[in-house]
Length: 363
Image (tube, rainbow, N blue to C red; front, side, top):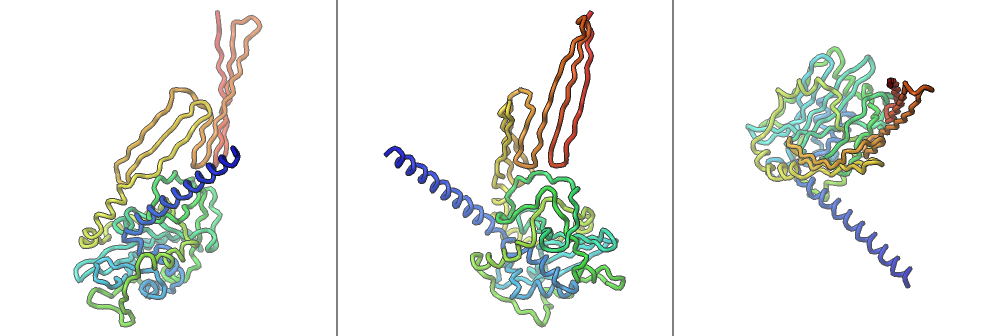
């Protein structure tokens, strides 16, 4: 009887735990599905850039209904918005701005593709979602399983990420990321050819391509599977690898008052949602560190740490351990004491050892 009661209690607790996790996941999905960026696949845009032979073809692929990359209706007119592409280049860095046509006088940047040639046969690419569309800057790049990759395992480990981001179902890049070489993508080779002239889309609110016909946007529940179709080949990261690209893009960024006004409530609610708490504990102190940080520039941190020296600390990010050994020797006549301390530190980047010796004389 006692065993049966225990099993019933255990099963009930397990079901409650599963239900709670499901509710949390549904809440997160409902939160992010309200953002404008939920209706545009950054991963899909990179996939179209990979397939295209030129920026002109890339723009056409973005606006092709069957590709299911674009489901945006930012002006609320009941039709899909046309996305035009504007290219700018400085030296070996390209930026390709993906811009939605909102009205005759307004446009809104959706994302920017950043591309840099880093060697004779090497190039890197990222796409950065606009913060007015995705609630915060969102960076996506090809994953190492998608193409030939450079074995850049010496890259500095990225700092822990505290936010859920607008793509809660995506996996974040590991600390030691492998950077994909995109030099062999046809469009990349095309834009670095000597005869290439930067592409600026000739289309506008009044002038649309003859092949394009707007269509009705799909409901989120219908569009969502298409949106995540491209996700396995790409990953969301926190590091902007092309550091010069933002300097090129910043002066040319375009935003729409209409889009900002229509989405102000959902974007601000998303930014104000607290980030998940993180904690670490040491074997000697049991120290706890908690974060409660809204998705805005303001940051609140609370600490509760006893004033006790701890030697080992474990984080739920990259692990680091500290070990310290102290040995004391005394001379036969007792007038001199030697203290030797050896401290070892190990972590994902390797290990290091530091030894110190202190001599004390007694008269």
